[in-house]
Image (tube, rainbow, N blue to C red; front, side):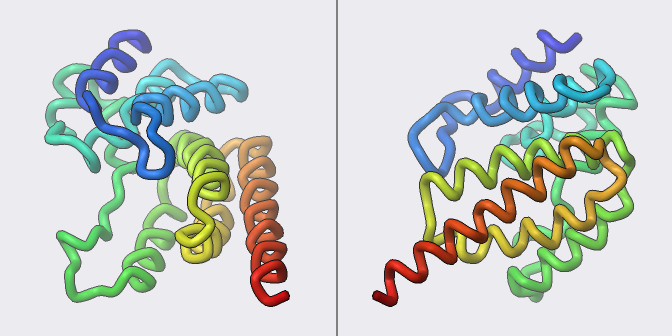
Length: 180
């Protein structure tokens, strides 16, 4: 089932590229699943890790996921799919949408929190490496989100905290360079 989920995600993301750097988008879910595999996990968690962005970033629906991969995987992917997006809540600014998303994700299942922690780790590394300008906004958002993800795997929680703190340190060093 994991291979089927990887191939489904690969097909769904198609020719999409990561925003920061020109790598194929599928490399991100592969890294997220790889991180989840380093801690206690289920097959459904690995499938959801591969599929965690398909509903947000492609025409695939939760119904499609449910039909192909079952209720457990669909439930996890649904928990991992941002609810408070600009298209659904245009009256809320980014800061307010992110605050609401953090509050929502504080209540997701421990399995979904574990996958989300892996997502935070990979995204944080990627953004710090490729876009310090956006990182100034993104990293503080991830600090708040990581705090809300307590209850996911503790090792990934610590790793996410480390990556966010490392990002904050790099931003601080960059700021000092700019003000010299």
